[in-house]
Image (cartoon, rainbow, N blue to C red):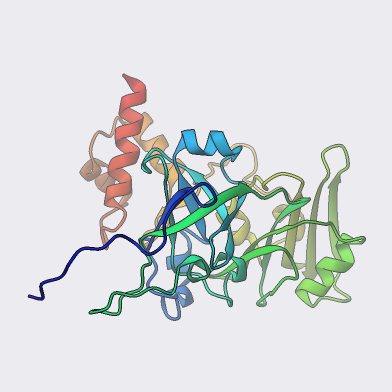
Length: 315
């Protein structure tokens, strides 16, 4: 035991930086993901950096769920996906530590943390940064999948490995003059046939590039955060190009939703349907019906929270 004299954080909150930023890890990743991010299964649950913020604070700042926020401190800045949740106390925010210049250059949390360390342990003050938060207003949002690794030229991007290649979230402050040319450069597909679906009334665009009749890359662009079934799109890479452009399962096909149980590939929508249709009322019942939570067990707290919210809404 080493006796110490408690001291306040070096980074002080104030009018310019009113929020206290806590950082840490997420369920399926470790440190800077040099190993864990190589496993596609571990990227299914959360594939990009984010910032959690209380609903009232988000409303005060004009932040909407799934949009992007610019987070600044005296040391630097980061761009992060907004996650609005009552898990956070007012005045405090949380962001994960894992992303680097290789996976999300503007999502690096170390850029926000002061160069202050504990005099005994050397531990950095990574749990108490002082930050300001403001909405980012991109001209466009995008989502891309490809067999080959991609490294976009964009204001924001975050990429992750998948079983079929790579997935990438994107956003930019100015749209390119020619989206197809931009996408060809992004994917390195100068001559591949391109399938195109454009919604001029809403400003949306979807491009799929094929080789030998199989989709090898696709880009989805919208003025707002791109709404589609991401896991479904990822799974269709390598299939027919026209099918992937729908962005979600065909009518009559169940959409499993975002992956919640990464070990056994069970989606959130699948779990919610089973709770409603089978009357599941415990994590054990969910496991018996769907196997979710029966492998590593890491998703069991989220299953319990999902079940609690569902049962509370039904009362």
